Length: 317
Ligand code: ADP
Ligand code: MG
Image 1 (cartoon, protein in one colour):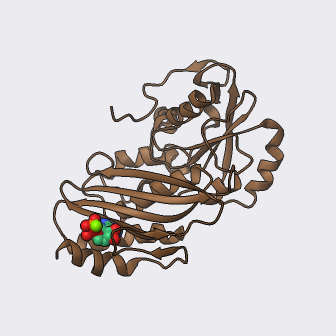
Image 2: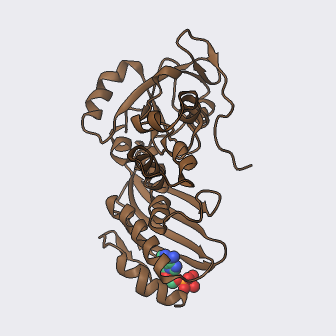
Image 3: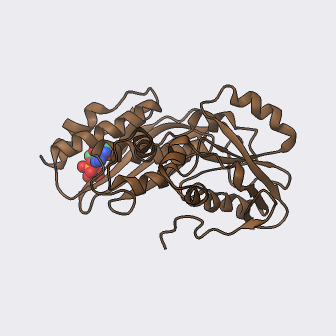
């Protein structure tokens, strides 16, 4: 199978129709019709074999994850995802692997209503770059720069699950707790409904991809303030509590990446509005601390003393 058979026989038939795609896969470029007046949001994420995922990960999970990590960035901006491109570098053209990969990718894109509109296919070490284009009404996007001292800090879902899963993957344990954690790594849920519900309400928002402390650190830096987080309030899942030693819980939750939850700040005076907005959303949310004058993100124990961890988050360089 050459790349043209791959594109036209494998990829194109899986693409959903959208009325805002005037011309999709097959030409030199796609023609798209953005909603009049809306602001476009463009995100891209690359997954490299043996860096972001082990080569043995099921192809369908690699595909799902490649889409979900990008959808999470759109969620963190409060956007509605619309279109995707896929730049795919494959070591060889393995039809069975490719079919599984595309099945996972299209599952995630379909769940979000996104159409694949183009891409590129090349030979080399397995590398997947997905780009997603979404939109948001003018002035409504969530950014990293609006947090103010006194705001409350929240996070959705539970933390540390994907980092715990990475330790389990090699052993392939069969118990239910381990399986649930592995799914959290392989099939992350982009919090799209939550992101939209936070429009006009959150003062800043980020998705947790590198680790809670590292990602909230971006909000602190870009907003010019500090944060105090209560270690005992970080939300942990029951499977994580069961699968990992208590001494590891905090490090996993505070610095483990790949959970793709949303971490955000809301002015304290608007917490009732947040409760009302959350009633419509798809995610549990926990208040974990507050924005303070100063800089940096500090984790404190129940007596208010700072806790120093061995790591804060993943860095490539
Ligand atoms: P060009 O040579 O003009 O760059 P290609 O031959 O690479 O075009 O691609 C042909 C068409 O197939 C284009 O519309 C391109 O966007 C699409 N395409 C190529 N690879 C992919 C892919 N991995 N996923 C989705 N669309 C793809
Ligand atoms: Mg061309």
